[in-house]
Length: 288
Image 1 (cartoon, rainbow, N blue to C red):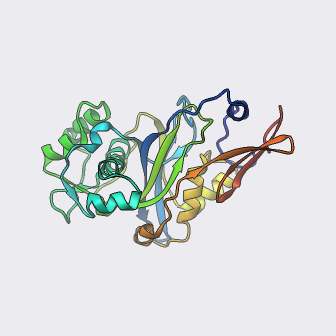
Image 2: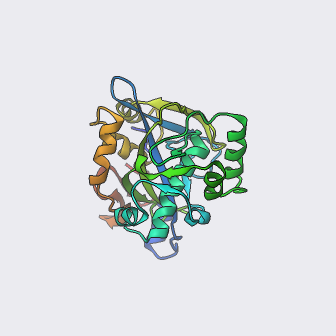
C-alpha cells in the first residue's frame, strides 16, 4: 500500500451490492472517541492504541480510546461544566442523547485508557486512578455490571464536561456491516493521571505527536482509518493541548459520510472534504 489507509478487501463487492440495491445499509450506532493530548515541549502528543489484529472491525489499525454509547449513559448523572442544553445545541441532538455522547466519551476514556475526566467538585479532577479499587470499578464498567452514573455516584464525583471539546463527527460508510455515528472529542490529560493500556481490544498504546503519526501513516508504517488520520492532520497546527481545546468550539460538526458513485465504468469512493481518501475501483479490479 502507498500509505497506511485501512482498506478492507471486501469493500468493492459491498459497494457494488449497495449500488445495485442488493445490500441494505444497517443503522449506525452512536459512539464517541477522545483524542487525549499532553504537552511535550515540542507540541502536544496524542494517545493512540493499536487494535488487535483479531478484531473484526479495523484490526491492526491505530485509533483513539472510544466506543459505543451504553443506553444507561442517559441516566441522571452529576454534571459539571456546560449544561446539557448547551451540549445539545453543540452536538445537534436532544439533551438526553447529547448527555449520552459526552458520557460515553468520558466513560470509554476511563475504560480503555484509565483516565477519568471527573472530580469531587466542579473545578477539580481526580488524581491517580491506578489502585486496585479503581481497577475493580473499571472492570465492572467494562463488563456493564456498573453504569457510569452509579460509578460516579458511588465515588462522589461529577463528570467534567468542560474538559472536553467536540471536534468532528464521522459516520461509517453505508456499505460497512458495522456502522458507527461517532463524535470525536479533544481533551488534555489531567495532572496526576497517566494512561495505560486497559483495553482488551488493543495490543499496544503510544503517545505520539500528530505530525510524526501522520508521517508514519504516509510511509505505510501505521495503519489508520480515514477519520483517524484526518483528525491527526487537523491537530498539527496547534502548539499545545490548550490551543486545540480552545479551537474546538468553532469546529464544524457536520457529519462526514463516504459516498460511492459509478463513473466511467468504475466506482469512485470519496469522503467529502477529504480528497486524500478518494479511491477509484475498476469493475473487477484493484482500487487506486
